[in-house]
Length: 380
Image (cartoon, rainbow, N blue to C red; front, side, top):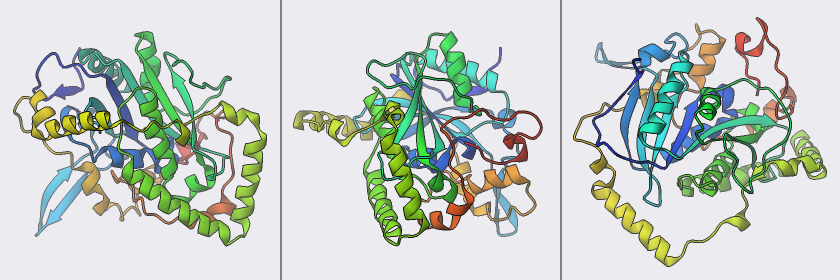
């Protein structure tokens, strides 16, 4: 059976411990958490080793290609992309990273191809990410709902049943379980008033990065996220000090959060649980990093010229003209930039607060022609 992807020429026999799946779509990315995480990962040394056929998996009317005009001519043309990268984490350990926009078509075939990739590289652990709006305050540590095809000892898994709209990563997780592969999904909870405001929830991205490492995955860069989190906390504190409805809303959410023992069943990272590395460990990590600068990553690739994925970085320049687009295309256009503007002001929360409603973390969703997806609206 033909595959939807092709490898760049690489050496055979490479074994990679982890694969991260982070596909961008606002329907499963409340608070732009996954975009913020992608921005952090993009700072690591990486090389593209496989790409999927965009023509086969994307709806170009929903995720329109971007053309670049220059001096009376079209100088460039880029489409939505789904790529597999070989990335080196901050400890010098390599991992696979599937990134780009979430495909519109042929999910079953894509999942079969991903299972093949996992087996080709003898991947032991797969992690995927999502973010959902919830009635939680931003003043409490970001927590998340964890799922896994193979439970990790000592990890909190919420008991019960719920339904929500699926992402491609959910489809893959379901299929991978039948092949006895280890797949863990980290679904961070975002305060609903932040999710509706358009402000990125940096604490959520930071929590995902830390939890990934806690579960045996790659060690992702935290420095920039921590700096942005500090700035965002200061901005939120100023907003809270101004009083008004937002302060009352947060106080009410805090009261409910602290009084409800069910919240303790969600997983979260703790500053107390962070272990400071020894000098020897720091030295080893530095040596691996320096080795990587002289070919640690590139030595694993045969000499080849792979095209640069320009879609995310160039697309934002054409995102302002969406007047003629339908609701779904407007949504795609608004959120298509590969990197989140992490400096967005949280004060938009106050303007939106009266128009948003808190929701449970999961709910039974309506089906049929009037479902939110068909109407082009977001329901998390």
